[in-house]
Length: 146
Image (cartoon, rainbow, N blue to C red; front, side, top):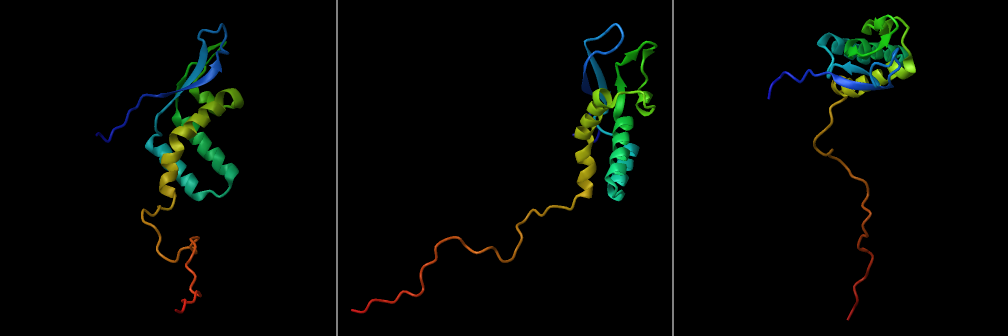
């Protein structure tokens, strides 16, 4: 086993092509299979320190989107839309950016959250257990005399 991992981008389908003249059947984007180290560290820092869920969602979402997006096949009347357009406010959230962020969350969230979670115990906890539900033999029974 190698410490290097596959680097083939992960395809994200964006639905039917909306490009001028429809040069392809489906609009697509491609994400890195894992975040680059600087993006992963920035996301972990945000997850470990920001208590405001809106701010945290914005920060981590942008890291996933900007750090994860490799390319897409989106075109407009002037030609290919650069991936940098994710930050200029011109791209539709619901049909374009949200599916990319959702897939990025599926790819990256677990590896970022794992170090922040408390370790789980592999052994059973010792101590008093709850009362038994089994029927107990009666201790008040008297012996029969002969």
